[in-house]
Amino acid sequence: MRDGLRIYLWEKHKSGLEGTFATSGKVALLVHGGTWSGRPLFDLQIRDYSLMDFLAENSYDVWAIDLHGYGRSDKTDKDWTDSHSAAADIAAAVGYITRLRGVSKVNLLGCSAGTQRAGVFTMENPDKVAKLVLYAPWWKGNAELNEFRRKRMENGGKPLPQYRDVTEESIRSDFVRGDLAQHPQFEADVVDKLVKEVLQANPQAPNTFVENAHLPILDPARITVPTMIIHGERDYAAMEEDLLPFYSQLRTHDKEYVLLPDGGHALMLEKDHRRFQHEVLSFFDRP
Image 1: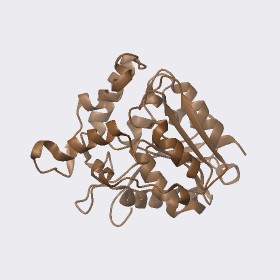
Image 2: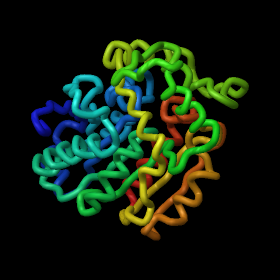
Image 3: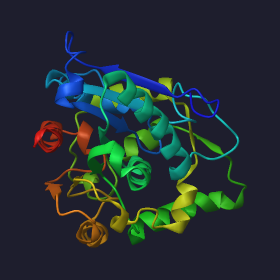
Image 4: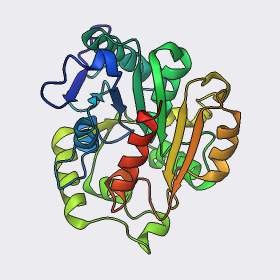
């Protein structure tokens, strides 16, 4: 619970390891983006695509959150699940997980808009974050992305509602936008499975992108924990021109910038997902 809102958490770990996490510190929380809720994104049950299964098999206690307004968590008309209210959800989740597992901090991964949410939480609570992974993030944005969001906010001249319908087209678009149309990186049955799971779990999503009219949200000078930025070469949202200046200004010298060839915005669910999984594990695992 957080301020009367029920916040859904989905957990996975290997049987018998419950008593080891306080010593190992192998606890991770995964934060979804602006459209898909946590479980379809991080635990898609097809072949070896589940990041949660991969981390659990490598002895992690791994959790995925549904932020308020998404999936199985409560909705509210008090806000549109902006990054700061979402960070409050993360704070409640981290508080619960650290008490349950006897740890003082967690490893934190944010995906897409989840990078803004996880980043804000880290800025406000550096003592609660062991390591931070920003997957497919942005800082000030790029011209193409900012124009796309501007048109969304204009909404054809109609008032913008708090929630928008999640459509099959919108889910599939992350796999074909920009260069990916000529260089597809996905397997068809994986995307078909994702569409089915997302539409079932999350038929609507908050119009959270309105806060991106006021970028940047993140201040690299306030991020002091070990941090990895990771994205694909063909990501329409995460681009080096935007992120390298952000990376250089992070207030930590314990940092990595990983650019994976050919990958798009949904890199974690593309053909090179195993490389992504191993990069995340390597970063979380290192002393």
